[in-house]
Image 1: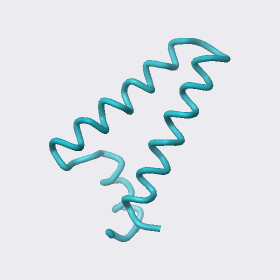
Image 2 (image 1 turned 120 degrees about the vertical axis):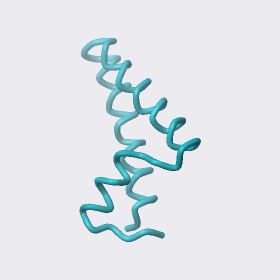
Image 3 (image 1 turned 90 degrees about the horizontal axis):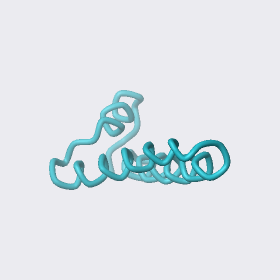
Length: 63
């Protein structure tokens, strides 16, 4: 699995998890959804994402 594929999987998982927790546990979990979305928007402009740095450090290939 490449960095881009893993990044999409992690971002999607975080969004689904935070929405489910926001509905069933506390609406404050929806702030995490907003954080993930803003980070995705930021990375589209800058080309840098903290999770990509972590995934590269973990040894995943570019592609």
